[in-house]
Length: 351
Image 1 (cartoon, rainbow, N blue to C red):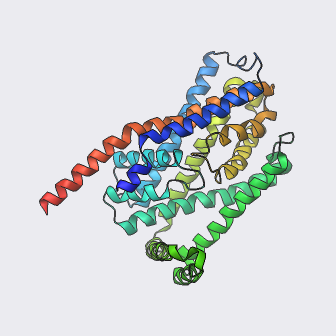
Image 2 (tube, rainbow, N blue to C red; image 1 turned 135 degrees about the vertical axis):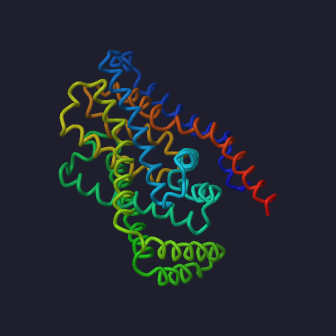
Image 3 (tube, rainbow, N blue to C red; image 1 turned 90 degrees about the vertical axis):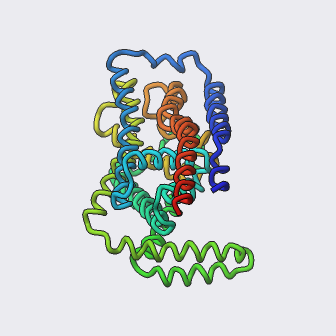
């Protein structure tokens, strides 16, 4: 417990905030123009779409909470689901995107009363659903937008495309492995893992890898018995959660830029974000901080009337979709720790 809690100590929010502010400040300075904030002209129309943009994060979080309730077979209350999702998002926000918040998420579920195997099964199934969403939606949008899915005039376009294909390749291979391990033959997968970790350079992690493989076997046994309704509900919640995340930007565009209201542009903005997020999934910074702001300006700059405005819009986007989880985690984590500590202490006394 101490190891997980220490990795999520509230002081860790300082680093992603400093990185994000630093990169945003550099972008504003590098492209300084007194018109950088000139598009921010508040009206009832603007206020309405900003409120809707905020509501998209609510849609995202409620969908995630509903999904985790479904994945735990309704063993969690909405309050427990809220705490777990907020803490899961917090752990992702303070960890490198390439690492994510998987281990803490298993820990949070375990402390809320699920067994270690059940907790692992829930998290692995959630990850599987997220990866399938990307594997399916990205090629579909490519069919409609093709070359437009990448910003035509972006700086370092070749690096962006390379990063995208590398990220998508990692997700695709990982999803294939996970699909095979969960639905086809988890025992053969365990044998493969055991063989791979015989190599001298990685042999010291063999026991941990075998433990993870055993968890996959248990997860496979559980999810193979799930009815179609389980997959339909959790799959729909996955689509809603990711769509809510992406449509924050769509509604920010509608708040400030009149010409962004046609359906073609809206799905193009959506598709650009999918491509952008593929790259952010392999980001080495906490929550993609700094890199997210920079990539945002490259990917979406050509879709607004004046490119000078894009850095300011990126700051608004992160203020809505990223920073709230940092502060929510700082507030919720100490309360949750006291709650689970008292619960475990009470359990020991009863025993």
